[in-house]
Length: 73
Image (tube, rainbow, N blue to C red; front, top):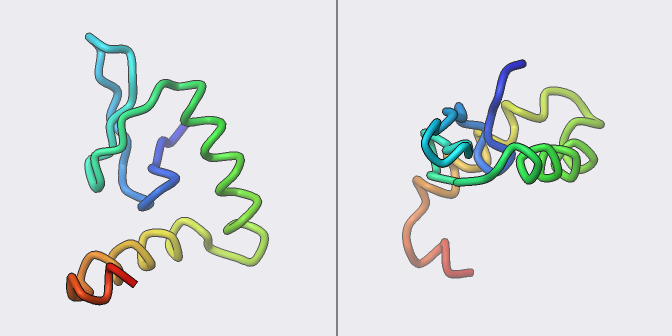
C-alpha cells in the first residue's frame, strides 16, 4: 500500500527503530494507527471531489512558498 502524508501529500517512510512513519516533505511523525486515522479524516475532506492527494500537495506547496507574513494570517 502506498503511504503518503495526510498533511502535505509527501511520501512517508517507515522508521524501523521507532516503528513509526516519517514524512519526507513536512516531517510528520506518526504511528501506523494514527496515520490511518489522519488519512480517514483527510479522505472525507479532500477525496470526495477528485484528485485530493495532488490538491493537498499543491496547497501545502503554495503555503510553503508564501511569505512569512501571509502564513501568519
